[in-house]
Amino acid sequence: MRLAIVQTRPEFGSTRANLQSAIELMESERADLYVLPELFNTGYNFIDTAEVESVAERTDGPTFQAIARFAKDRACYVAYGFAEKTNRLFNSAALVGPDGLIGLYRKIHLFDRETLLFEQGDLGFPVFDLPFGRVGMMICFDWIYPESARSLALQGAQLVLHPSNLVLPYCPDAMVTRCLESRVFSATANRVGTENRGGVNLRFIGTSEVVSPRGEIMVRLEREEPAVGVVEVDLAEARSKRINQYNDLLAGRRPDQYTS
Ligand code: ACM
Image (cartoon, rainbow, N blue to C red; front, side, top):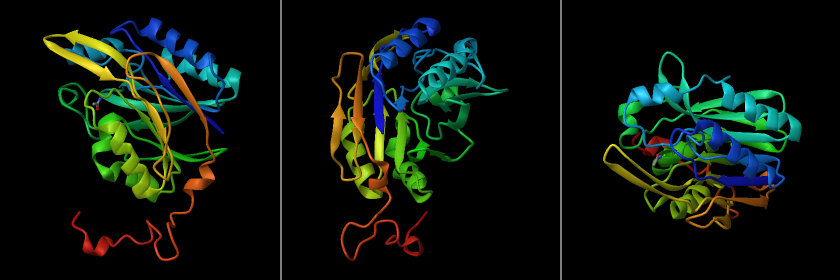
């Protein structure tokens, strides 16, 4: 299947324009599954919860409607990050297919000032079966906890969809280890650009990438520009966790010897 990472440059608060430019980027490359960044439609650097509240959407909001139309028209799947409004605010990711919403993930490990703006995720790390294999979602800073990708792998996820707004430089290389240690694919879609608001200046690092279960970087985008990276992947490759005759990475775990 054709897997696409979509690296965008959202403008803070310009929700409609950001949605439109993301759709145009997706239209530029045919794929079966697209991954968009974290908070791709709103921007990231909120000053307070009132700002989040003003742009947050319900799971069936206008952003979902537009993405669902795209997925239906193109018979494809899209994972995207957005500010989710219930009676609370979450930093969430939705997975949408030709028939509508497939799944939702709410970011569990909030980064920096996100802890002031969003509630901690409360849905665990769910996995979803797509025609080409089992996938799960985590968002950006979740990468720094190996438990995130491992939780997905233990439930049989073959591909980790990873909408991101990375500002630290470590994640792109670290994902090689995340993939090697659980023998999964990952698709990290990050954004580019800067946001200087309320005295907080953030520069997003681009470098979106797809990594294979053997730790190969199948595609890695530049640091500065919006772009789409497409690779052909066979998720069956992530099914076996065996690395030699004696070592099966998941079966070889020793949870009775670990401290949780
Ligand atoms: C991040 O979690 N957005 C760095």
